[in-house]
Image 1 (cartoon, helix red, strand yellow):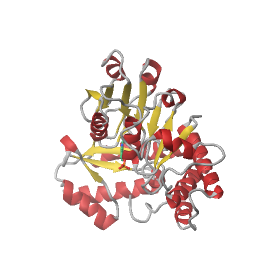
Image 2 (image 1 turned 90 degrees about the horizontal axis):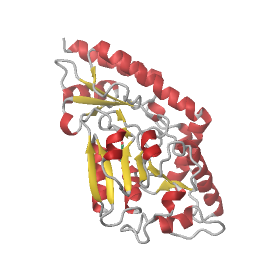
Image 3 (image 1 turned 180 degrees about the vertical axis):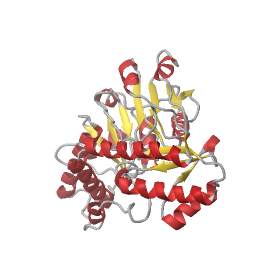
Image 4 (image 1 turned 90 degrees about the vertical axis):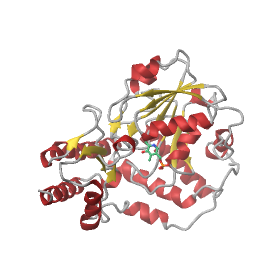
Amino acid sequence: MGPGPSNPYPEVIEALTRPVLGHLDPEFISLLDETNERLRTVWRTSNLLTFPISATGSAGMEAAFVNFVQTGDVVVVGVNGVFGNRMCDVAARAGATVIPVEAEWGQAIDPQRLLDAHPNPQIIAVVHAETSTGVRNDIAPLGANKGGALLVVDCVTSLGGIPVLIDDWNVDIAYSGTQKCLGIPPGLAPLTVSERAMERVVPTPQSWYLDLNMIKDYVTGDGTRAYHHTAPISMLYGLHAGLGVVLEEGLDQAWERHRLCGDELHRRLPEIGFGLWAQQGHRLPELTTVTLPEGLDDVEGRRTLLERYGIEVGGGLGPVAGKVWRIGCMGHTARMRNVKMLLGALEDLVTATR
Ligand SMILES: *Cc1c(COP(=O)(O)O)cnc(C)c1O
């Protein structure tokens, strides 16, 4: 939200401008190791294979399927928004027989429906925080009852914003992105893989670049590290520094900061005339979806917000394009002053339509 407040953490900007080391320089390798350790803390996991994929969140999704799917494998996917659909597409391209379990957009997926969809799937996959709808899907019941399946969870818009407990919830594979609740520029996809899942990595994944069999030697190998691809050094400096900021604040405090901002938005927006769209009890604090008050134009309203107030709000996607707004309040932007500024701007907008 807003050009001023949406500047990344100063620590991250400083890190991005640091002199570039070689990707096999021992100093860089130790920074990578430290980054992975910080990621384990943020993921709440002890998984050895925890590292950032050198590409955006979608590459994390691709890595999560292409390494574990063989042609014909059954993959059950929860679909209640854009990113559930993307999971189906990615899994199908990896050769999976996909069983989509749909819920209405704006509603959460009943975990029991995912568990009942097939007697013995290889993978059950779900999006934790659906950025297209502002809905949180429950993960814990899936981990507790997944049987022989691997549990894949998209945590792109949840990591750093709401509790993500990889080990407690028995999640096998999870990926995220740097630019959502972690508040770091886009470009890396934190990934974590359980020991149980590591035993099931397919021998020759369809993707060479994302093949965990090879990447793991660079990421976790002891002593010498084998070259696989050149790590994006500056981005890793940025991630290392950004995770440092998050951990210095404290992960619990970061969750609390997001929660307080979300609570205030959810309390005040209806008073101004907006309708809360996502299912009650499953609303994300970091992504609030609203229906518009009578008389407020979607495109015009968002343009005014950006041009006059410097605040960017997302439009609706898929079936609700033009009908809802998606208000992101995540990472370094999740501050009460930004919430107040947005609410003030929205009040002005709505008053102007009367
Ligand atoms: C943003 C997002 C992605 C994709 O991440 P990119 O960094 O845009 O590739 C995947 N899943 C969810 C839930 C997201 O919000």
